[in-house]
Image (tube, rainbow, N blue to C red):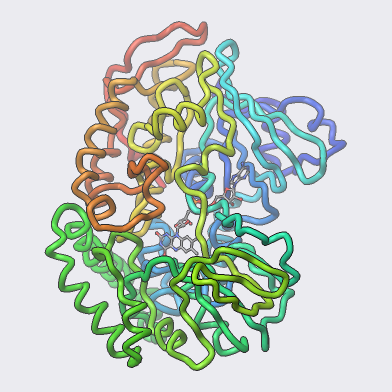
Length: 537
Ligand SMILES: Cc1cc2nc3c(=O)[nH]c(=O)nc-3n(C[C@H](O)[C@H](O)[C@H](O)COP(=O)(O)OP(=O)(O)OC[C@H]3O[C@@H](n4cnc5c(N)ncnc54)[C@H](O)[C@@H]3O)c2cc1C
């Protein structure tokens, strides 16, 4: 099973892209590992496989280039809000980041460079959207349905399936009453309409999340008027961002220990916030004072200041950083509306106070589908179990955010309860990549067809994190946020410090898993743990 199949050797390792009409397109393509997505997750998994000497894999990507988040979000001012030297692969540190928080084009460029360095393009099938996956117990394979830009669906069969589909990937666009009547232009920040010239336009911005606070200051100087619809005021801290001087880049290039020490310092400073988020809100008071002072310094109008004052504990929603957001809103052409947006008319929007605002364009800074984002993937596991239905009915449950009982050989990257509000998720992704690779090796070492996490291990993990999350600021901080599912359960955040996650994923514990033999029977439990370090990313 480990040797590349003929199809994979041709299609996966030779770099030949399978097109409609291609001979290969008409029959299933077999491969050992199918990875979905080319963001940090999918690329990280691909690199780990290459480093491990495994070349029988494909990466399926519905778009036409790599990059995920950093390909899609091209809105003005888009940048990371975790320092670039931390928000990047540990094994591909970049001495040349231009700023402490680098802009989107640079991060996208970084991901493309990493892709080329590891020659990953040969494994990527662009324009292939996975629409569903079904576990076939007879062949011990995942059978993937796809939709391709070339029109002809291609079926992939893979022993292991790795989903790096992204947690912030599907734009959440509110169904505003009357939007179909709107004669202007409307778009989401993740689908920025670069053909639309905002100069001199009246623009309504809906939402005050991480994207809106980046693009509002950028467009404020260009538009005639920006009307910001705010449901709740976010905490905004000063952004300690600056251009990195040439000498730092040189130092980081010629003396890598300095770069590593800087990254470590950033990591531990960010980690200190986790304490406050997880059951010690008193520690956040000092940070809240910084936020209040920032607001007071930048907004002199007491009415506007009151509107912009957050009314929940810092950390309950993502903490934002900007030096330009408040000044933009305090400018003469900006208005902050706290009454909800209730109706869209042909050339205006109406708020819940009945005030009509003339607008030429509506920009949604309304974030993404998060806890319901897996509904779109139709995944059927052992005995026909329907992942989306189970998660809808019982809440999202996984083991370590990576594996799911009933779904053999399936691995999520940046899966449920592994998101962060305080540090780089690339750290989490790297831990998950190592873990997934180690689990595959464990199965291989035992000549098993499949490896599946035990229900008991999964339940233990969920009980534990939900117990910890109950004390977290996301539940106790007095806000509604996108971390919680429809039932108010936090299915998004990793509660605590990330080194604990690193520790929890260091080994694949044999007692947590069951092996399934080629005949479909259980092959029992693995004997010794598999360290998640070899061939690691
Ligand atoms: C504007 C913005 C700024 C952010 N800043 C930070 C930050 O500073 N720090 C931080 O830690 N995190 C940040 N994040 C979170 C960010 O999403 C993650 O850090 C990271 O980029 C996620 O990588 P990923 O590979 O898991 O997912 P993504 O980058 O979303 O990639 C998923 C890929 O899968 C593809 N895909 C999805 N479904 C399918 C399918 N069915 N078939 C085929 N292909 C599919 C998509 O096209 C995409 O290329 C930010 C997010 C946004 C939106």
